[in-house]
Every structure is written in structure tokens, then in C-alpha cells.
Length: 336
Ligand code: NAI
Image 1 (cartoon, helix red, strand yellow):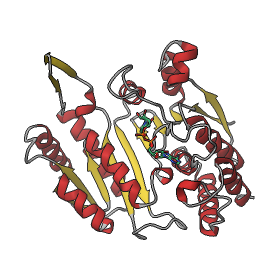
Image 2 (cartoon, protein in one colour; image 1 turned 60 degrees about the vertical axis):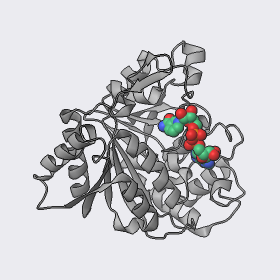
Image 3 (tube, helix red, strand yellow; image 1 turned 120 degrees about the vertical axis):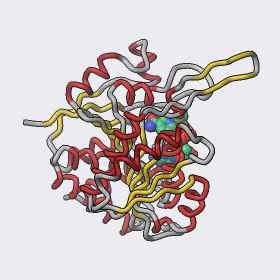
Image 4 (cartoon, helix red, strand yellow; image 1 turned 180 degrees about the horizontal axis):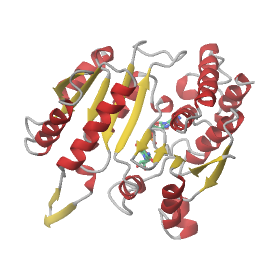
């Protein structure tokens, strides 16, 4: 019997890259039945809501989704669909593996990081108000429950994958209470893992400098919400950009897999979006579902396409002159 996966095409380049990922996953023999669901600007136009209740209910019911990016207008309009989705489904951990990709030339050839981001609170709580005209405040929320939960998740995830060290980036020298609580909770959880993995802490500004100088010094990075968001993009830049970094939003009962990149309105509908990050997110999803053979098949296929480096196969962001479709078809061909 096929497994059911919810597919949220999303906005901008979302439909292009999720279609590519679906084609590749289907060609791998993963035997998936896709349930396509609305979210984002298209959902608002056709269903009157940016995040329809049936989309949430379906993900809750089926437990796994592959999602395209969703646009969030800056400084006005609706609350972010991504933030709502993470809160409603309690997807408290964002996991983003950032690795050097064969065939993509960058300054470093030895990057192998896992970024784990707290996904439900911090400044992303979205609690903002104007106190008097011209004065606004945004609240940064930290609870010991969420801090300990993400810390435990990070240590368990790292240990299960044989990783050597977890590093927290923080700003507890200034944000003594919120980041201070985060650190206190991580240290407390670490007591249970101290015999299996190393742990250290860095003030985030110093951490950024060290990360861009020598990423090989780091292994698993654990961050609160906003820092995790920013560091994910910074780290993507170390391995070739946003087109090559996958991600997962994980909770206890469901998981939503999506690339780190956004809806890229500047290149939407031009047919040149790099589908790799979404395909890689699909590989993470297949592993999560226990379909490890199919995941490996896809990974080997994109590795071989990247190593061959034929410009006509690859999208412009990674030095090619091909299209989303040429890249997708090259990967499918490499699986045969
Ligand atoms: P973005 O990630 O969409 O684009 C940044 C730059 O990277 C652009 O130049 C874009 O063309 C390029 N890029 C991104 N993905 C690419 C791909 N697959 N292939 C080739 N080039 C790619 O970030 P931006 O411009 O800050 O955000 C645009 C919209 O996306 C905003 O509305 C934002 O809120 C939303 N967004 C949604 C996310 C999600 O749904 N998970 C995550 C990040 C942003």
C-alpha cells in the first residue's frame, strides 16, 4: 500500500521545485500517494485563507508533508504561514543539514554541519505592539519547557547520528534572562549526554566570525529561533547558496520537510529555480519514513549529476545554463 504524503506547493518558485521533487521521488520507486493542499497566496485567492483548516488537519492526520516556500509580506498583511504552521502542528525543531556538495565549487570543501533551531518562540512569537506613536516593542519569549525540549532533541539527534559536538550560539551576555534561560536549560539537558558527546558555547557574533573562517571547527549548532534562521542562510552561503540546503520542521507526531530558501519572487515562473534543495528535503523525508533505499538512490543520482557538472543540466545559481526541468530530468535519468 502506498504511503500518503501531503504536498504544499506554496508560492513563487514553490510549485516549480515541489513538482520537480515529486517527479524525482516518484521515479525513485518510493510509492507515495500525494495529497495536494493549499497554503499561501494561492490559498488566499481560491480558499479565502492563507492557511486553510483542512491543510492543517490533513498534515495532522497523515503525519508528513513536503512543502514549498510561502511568501510573507514585509511589515504588513497576514501573519506568516510558516510561523502559524509550526505553532499549530507543534513543529518545535527545525533541522538543516549543511554539507559541501560534490561538484559545487566554494571556498570550503569540508563543510558538514547540522543546524538545529528552536522553532516556536523567541522573537518569532510575533508579540509586538506600539506603546505610543513612534515607539514599538517586540517580545522575545523563552520558556524552560521549549528550551529544554529543543536541547534534548538536539542531543538525541546528534548522538543518534554519531556526531561529536553540539555548539550553542547565544547572546546571553546582553540578553541575560532570555538567552540566559536557553543556556541554563541546554546545560541541564547536557548532563544526560555528557558521556556521549562534547558540548560548548559561543557568543553569536564571535561564532559567526569563526564559522565563516573555518566551518570545519563546528559539528552540530543549536540555536534559538531567530539566530537559527539567520545562521541557516549564512551556512547555506558556505556550500553554494540557498538552492542546495534542505530542511525539516519536526514535532513529536508530524514533520514538514522544506528547503531553507524562500519563494524567490525574482525568478518565479522563469523555469530556472534550483530544485535540488527541495529534492534533498524529499530525501530527508524518505529517510524519516524509513524509505532509505529510495533516498539513497536519489542522493546517488544527484551526486553523479553534480559531479558530471554538465552546464546544460544545472541551474544558473550553481553555474549552469540549464533549467529546473533539465536538472530534474538529469537526476531522473541518473537513477535508471
Ligand atoms: P529567498 O530565499 O526567496 O531568495 C533569496 C535569493 O536566493 C534570491 O535571489 C533568490 O532568487 C535566490 N534563491 C532562493 N531559492 C533559490 C533556488 N531554489 N534556486 C535559485 N535561486 C534561489 O529569500 P527572500 O527573497 O528573502 O524571500 C522571498 C519570500 O520568501 C519572502 O516573502 C519570505 O518571507 C519568503 N520565505 C519563505 C520561506 C519558507 O516558506 N520556508 C523561507 C524564507 C523566506
